[in-house]
Image (cartoon, rainbow, N blue to C red; front, side, top):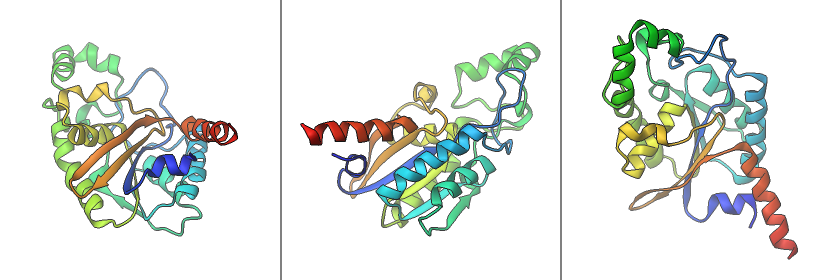
Length: 224
């Protein structure tokens, strides 16, 4: 079985990708939601690796968040597909309000109670002037469902870790407070079967190296 056959598996697929690695600010782990940061050189390379994969699989449409890290990833993948990249503000990462751009340690030190409350209730807690993950899910799911129902082929959606997690929680029937149990590494791919009766999550958090290992596995199988 080739990587193409493994990904397709029959029926329509929705490919849900996290953007590539960011140019991270220095000084510790930061809250990055609506901040419009660009891809790092590693992130651009990751996008080019997925471009090679999707050139084999074939895509009907490409959607992304309108933040540049998502747009950059989508446009690199779109090269050679002759597809327009459609950027949707509904797919932006969660708005972290007053915490945006601050380090985790700064928030923990200056507002320990709020830091603790978000850890206890990520679904419902809103940082000052920001969104909760429940707010994010309410914003994202109508756009995702519109893409899923209106596209007749296999669309690619390039979004963010938080966005992808709230989509996957919804599709898996998981409590939203458990969203951080779902891994979403930079440039991770999730594959969703779109069926008449609904959706089936086929794969979660596949790394860029998966496309290479699946090819190697296919090569070993065909030669045995």
